[in-house]
Image (cartoon, rainbow, N blue to C red):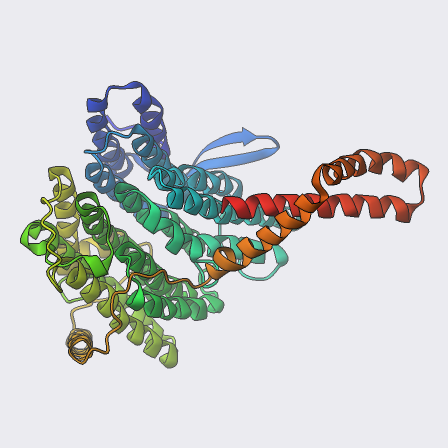
Length: 559
């Protein structure tokens, strides 16, 4: 009955190709793709390397099955089922087709066996996911999508450059441990770090995700960054630099999330915070740490997707998710409120919820590795998560002051998707052994000992006490109708100013300047034959400078 070793991306790609030609009601058939695809993966996949195709002079392996790829394969099928269910009310086939292609690209990336295959699916992730932002069809979404795509394509270019240099120096394209030992490895490392939202390379996430459609943000939260986590676990486990990068990622988003008014942007910062725990686990490199990173990636897709779904439901019914203008929604959206609280408890690592059984693995591994100071950073980050995601999101959206808004409850399909994700959060949190049995490395960790449980309960209690006290004293940052920027300053302020100056400079040339540029380009090859070396080179450089100025002016106008 099952097709042995069928590459998991194929059913998603076939479904995406058929969907535009089918009637609107046929969108319900897309639910069968992750269900049947997941069952086929569970029963039909066999460990080993399968399906090699010839691409130019390279043999590209599109199916490599081991416990690491299977773990992410199961996860991505679950995430696709939840996201597709959540989006069933949408009649926009652009979003549905892009979602299927995006999920398929993520599956292709985690099952490919070499760096060429990874590059192909890496770029497909970028090209398919950006439509989930553009599908919002607003000016802000269009510009955010362009900025998002620039980062994603740049990541792909770096990955390709690193792959080619790595192949030239080692003769290997194996998608295995690489380590930071060469220029090629650094190029690949930065490429993966860009998609994993490393500090200073993260603004595409906090800029793009809040501008996506309500359903698009659920897809986006599940795949891109988790593929990057998978790739880091495959190529750079035990790289100590990742421990420090991950610790920074857990802490810096907290300060922005606490003062941010757009609640979906709060969740975007929170996503970077959770990625930091995964990156720390990969950097430590022990079996406990790597299992913790993978387990937390598994849980984060579900509980972060749940929180994005609750805010998407609010956006769908109210039209915005600004904390300053919400509140009191629990009166008419009680089910969404309950699901949001479940997601908040999970991300905050309450005992009996999914975040507790994975985050504690990374924390324990950090202590075992002797990084006491970094463990304190993770402890601070855990308290911060409870503040901005565990309390702020449900409090300001559904409680706080009564905004007077009385929207309808979310559509049935949205509620079912949120219910399914909530049930998984509770089931994994209360019975983690099933998830632990799927982890790639040997695992003997037991989360529910007295030390871990009491420590976490104390942390949550004092964090809640601090929130109440700050709020009562009027010291907690208020929800203001403003835009907060971090690394976005480069393209929100600096680049537009450079672009305006560049356009003024180039427009000063007028028609004669453009003619001069054209003549320089056409005469440069002839000058190189008839003139001195320095004259020809000067002409080429001037033409290149003019071209760069024109291009820069155009790009900054777009973004």
